[in-house]
Length: 520
Image 1 (cartoon, rainbow, N blue to C red):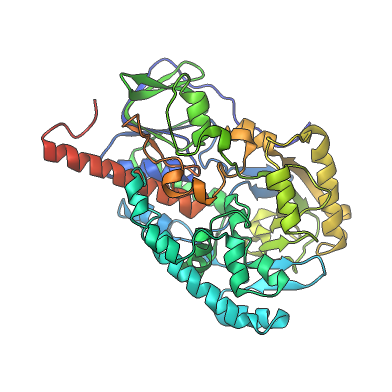
Image 2: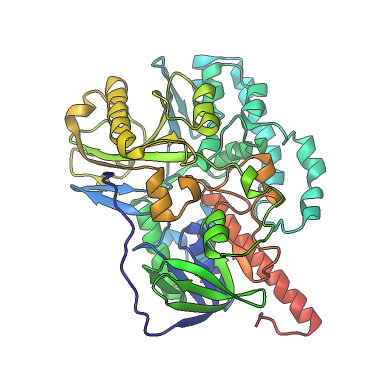
């Protein structure tokens, strides 16, 4: 039996229903941001989530004195959090300490070599020279290409609604000029020659659920995004970030209801009227914003609805990979393991094909290690370290018996790390537990246990992705990883900005026509 913690099943008081202007379903970062933005515009807002704490996948687990952030840990666009506090006249710095990291990521390759992706271009170039001096110029070219894509993909598109096909068509010339029909790996390989550096500079799609060999090269904008603002860690962890956002919600007057599992979105006359929880509690609202996984919303919360959500039908939808996450402490410290370490196995493209295409659990793997105690020692007892290891695996569309394979994968990962960057791990590991795609499906209602909703391929991006407003239900919105612009903290925070823009445009149109500003 998988020993990972499960979602809270506590029931709520059903003696009275709740009515508000806006109901936000799901309290991940996209839901939190949407709730705050709607409240700042004067709406009464209710935010509900089925877990015992807000944050969505950014839960906090505690075992044996070790603390573990369960969700996202890399902060790359801090201004998006700054904005949420500024909406209410506050400063994020007064509540949260975002600490810059260096190196951003440490790569450990299968041949024993190591590459540090550093906080300055100069230091990164020094690392590149150790592998391939001619790739220093190639990296400069990659950054310039990334900047050009960033100026279109992030500055012009990330917080813009794509509810109309012509909105995307207007950007086609720019996207074609930037070769956005290429994949991330294809674009990186045009600039970088050394095979190991090609791996290091093409892994970013995996951080948002995509295969670098199929993900649209629009996602190479992450290179420049990191250079523009840096890579940060929130002292106290993502849990501290969520805790302060919860306090901000309370100060702002957002009603937060936890332990509420939504059964269905209620409808009347083609309009969403709110939602009903599994325990029968009713939440009435004039607008509904979903932070949950869009495929789950359409297939489980809108029963009987036959609506064309996207240009690509469900049968042709490609989902992100699944995640196996191993949490543990160590009764000693590993100072040579960086805060963010990427441990690369012997295969790269072939392993990704096993995960994304063949959907089989291979004997080998590549890993992302998070060691928060490299920056914040409060995550573990004195003289100890806290870790989680994220291993990309097939989602539940693959035939993997996780009851049997979970413990085996744990042992293989511990053995591999013990032979390489964490000698003696098997003797000092403590209080370990894990999550599999089955846990993602059960605890987060993620379709097929996918780690990042639908995959970020070209035909599932922009207008082709789930729309931020349903094409047929005019007051149903999505601020989520599966909606535009995509997964990752910057993506879902921008998704909330898109919803805010849509509602503001609606209100302006209504005001111009002389009708009421809010739907009945």
